[in-house]
Image 1 (tube, one colour):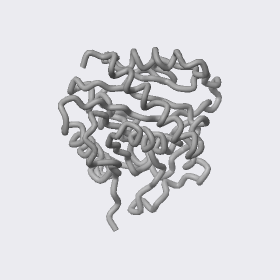
Image 2 (cartoon, rainbow, N blue to C red; image 1 turned 90 degrees about the vertical axis):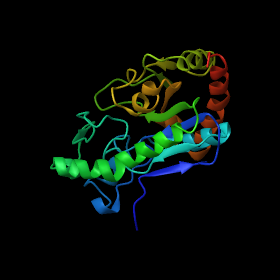
Image 3 (cartoon, rainbow, N blue to C red; image 1 turned 30 degrees about the horizontal axis):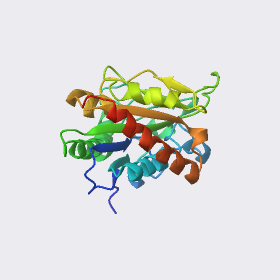
Image 4 (cartoon, rainbow, N blue to C red; image 1 turned 120 degrees about the horizontal axis):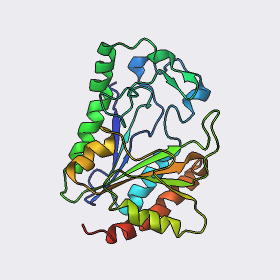
Length: 245
């Protein structure tokens, strides 16, 4: 049975919104033995995927009547949100955990993983984005409240953007007006990296975009994931109305 490196939800939908989830699942493909030598506890951590992000992505796509694309493999297999020349594309150590299955990966195996998982995902994302000239890309991620030996992160939600902040600016303002939220601009990480998914599929094409980071303890359950998807949809619509495009 052939492993499918991505899943498209609502493919026939014609909305200008396109929701992406690069780190949706912690799956290791069967041809890699279904494991990278990590414990189940490590594979359930943020190092392997973005917990809760897939559920938010699906709920948001449904609320907006939009298509969504989700990568079906763990970021530890190969990270779809990194450029092909990024040194963190294939991690050997992450937040205190050694990745046994990646310790001795050579260039040939890296290329095989690019062809088997990474490139098909990006080709499918590119095709979805090209269906309309006015596509708006919203990337959904989650982050852990605290990295090992680091201070706790105070934000409930972070909005990441690079030089194109047309959508992010009004979205941040709308979120900051919500009385129960601590909002971070380019937190807990700064902007974007050259060659990452937003850079590749939005910035290089002049497409409006934003990247939403949700703290993963806030989206642990299906109910909380659905609630966040439904909460974000009208805020995104209102933010888009405030842009010029």
